[in-house]
Image (cartoon, rainbow, N blue to C red):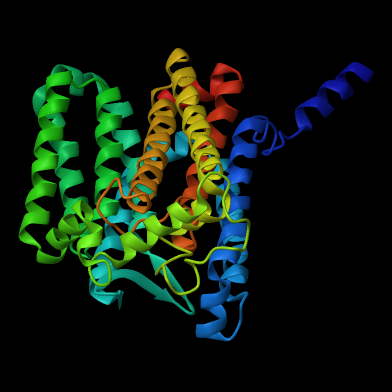
Length: 392
């Protein structure tokens, strides 16, 4: 009788949905470091600009902390959803992503000659950031379901390429070349993991580079950015102003920087100091050593995502592999482009630095990607039942 009651009690036990979700301390620590750097540097880089334009030195700091809280909540919600649901409803995520991109072109808010934001009260939502997350889910789902066809049949590659072309065209219409580049690179990398041949990968990469080159050549202001990139000092008070001021920030920082809060460039010399060019402020206040340390944290986070992808391959969890690998490539590409632009290695392009730059949509979307990684690591450490259900 006692044994029967004990068994009954055991059956009534409900599994804690948070159990095992935060077991991977490395992933949490790396994310927390980057988010903490973002809170500190947004406060440092924006204080003078916010005081001058809004009469409140902590205007951007408070909003960034609120966005951090929203991002943490979104991360938790994403992490609580089983991978099987994400995989089964990948098509729905594609519809949501395309709907957002169409909606922003129809009723979006135009800022700085770009129609990229949807107004929701006092908050602007960047549709392309959420669309990137939706596309990541869809393509991971598609590749996990049709991996064998992609490997065996060249024609099977055209379907995902057609979808990617439509999404890219919608983002370019905003226009937003940087986000398009990040998305294309991430999906192409996932496609390579899905099993396309090396020569096919090179061919598609060549076509993509040609398309981007054509877009630059046919757009005067994009062509002007290329000329500025090649010699920012030729017109440092006009077209080359942003890049030259960013480089001055790097030069001021030298090895160990001027110290937190002591940046000169943020005092109305460097535009977008708390958003697109925040890495220049990091380099100025913490020097070469501080800049390299931030890069190493990003590298460790990306490496952690790739390790999860490799573990997923070893457990034959294709969808989990594509998710982890896609998140890693997406974060790596966006961070590389932002840092490359600030340091003068790449032409000027408006892209935020993940987890660090001010920008609610970017921060929330980045945290949602971390939520996917948390879910992947949770299911990889559980018995094979969960992953087997995902592949069914």
